[in-house]
Image 1 (cartoon, rainbow, N blue to C red):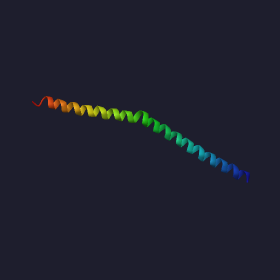
Image 2: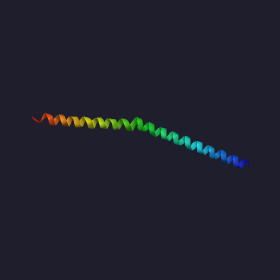
Image 3: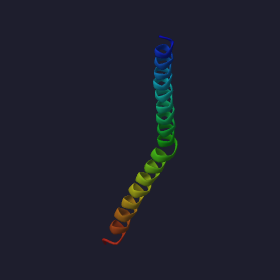
Length: 64
């Protein structure tokens, strides 16, 4: 019976440890996305919008 209890404790500990590790990895990836990826995408969108605006202004300036 003691061997069975040790095995059960090991399985419980392994599952809890795996879940904790998976949660920590998810948190790290989510933080990286929020701090690095999303601001970079927002900056790219802003630059693209400014480029479109500048092209429209340039075309209007040479129309007449």
